[in-house]
Image 1 (tube, rainbow, N blue to C red):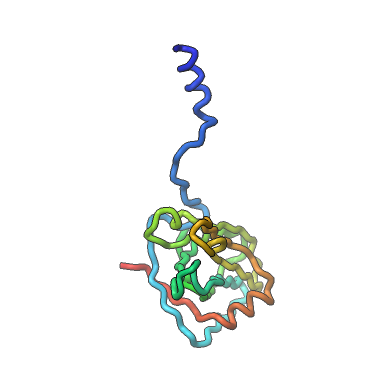
Image 2: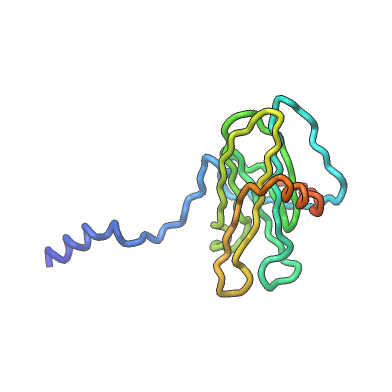
Length: 175
């Protein structure tokens, strides 16, 4: 009996633990801040500031899975703070100081499983340069697929095209 107990105690670290993954605080925001998002079809041009870098966040999505008119809201974190969100196919932009930065994309949902979907990407910004990042939900074409949040840096030509066909996202924290 002692041998069995000793084995179980020593072997327990190799068994998977059923823990909720934590949101990386270096990139994502703290807490459960949720966003309301409205889309603006008008033209939006960033203010030129040669001392900062310009960052575009694009969500490349029309609908999720087999549901027509269903779209996801993805909140975006920068260096540990939530800064905005996209809904469906949309984009927004912001300026950052030069240096190392950490971005987070997190599917905003009231359903626990999908709200854990997180994409992370780091970059080093240079003054006067433009950076493009894209979030999209993949592998959600049928009920058997597990959703996956892809957060990447598309090539600038693809990014500019996606911006040209997408509305501007205006997000505000929900009250």
